[in-house]
Image (cartoon, rainbow, N blue to C red; front, side, top):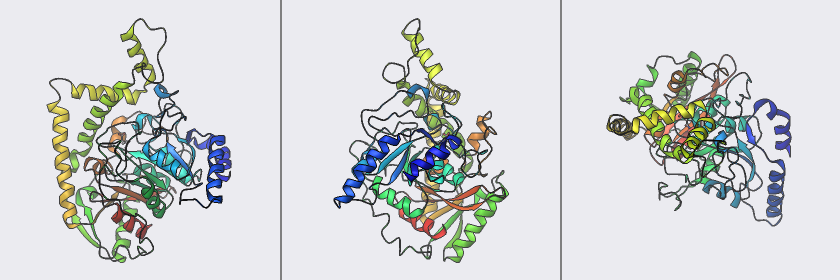
Length: 452
Ligand code: GLN
């Protein structure tokens, strides 16, 4: 009730939820009380959680931030949602997002922009901006987001909360509405690193319903967290990619936070090492081919026949498809479908998707090499703190370029975490990013716990 009261008072300003059903949440809370009364509880029983609105929830509207799914009510739960229900967590609502997770500011939502709880004239980041804002505003204890190129880590950084993108394959994508299937991962947005570890215990693991989920053993992500005290960094080797620091356009406040964390890590016993990721210059270009190509294929299913919105009064079937897609999808989604369709068309496939995939293999090799000598890599999350609402919305290319530090973890399929690390002169939160080798989320949790 306390969380629902906060939502009622403050979410009319912040707009972090697309759907918040208080009655449904209270019914789940009552069921959780019964579980507790019969001494049958888990760490999640009765804990209010928010879900990015691209996770399918049985019987609860799942819009993906799009008009095309405005009236879509899934008939099944995503695997992560099923796990949450089985442990009697409370789904307090579905959070706002950039349409189909395409964006970095939550301004591409077909519903409304979400505002940053630290300063309402600023964006919360994106695309999981609703989830990050909801956690920061204490509308829920934790939230789930998805990250295709930074959509968990970047809004977490801009909202002063923790965001963890697991290794590709660590968490089942079953019931996650796909954006770019080879890059998408679900992960937690929380107030502390310990909460992120707890959430990982809930959601990680192989799922026969997702053929890309990994049959990899799942550790207890919280085990030894008390032993991972502030000395958890002792003996770790922390790599600093030299290409990242030479990058033009890094805000001085972001740089200062980065330098502080580096000094802190050294004082906690980490060894700092300079490393090279030589293909960094190609990351944005390769990502913005691969992601739109996969999106154009995934979004072909929204044709007005099988799901949600259908344009009315159309001349024939072809016209119905055309009107449905051109009125159901917003401008950024249409832009990416067109880019992706073009790049995948006959005669262009090798030059674009094929070439970008080769570049991706080189980026993966850069990371594999770096992790031969380092436990984690340290980097900024974004080149600047949160920007003002509307500041970049008319300039998609500038918006794409702000993703430079987060895209690589998805391209290389490695885990990444964003941990709050300081503030800008204007009082906006700034996070720090750490990345680790595949399936080594424990190192991120340990290092994150050390610096938070
Ligand atoms: N900002 C990136 C994009 O627009 C990443 C989004 C995401 O991770 N879903 O594609």
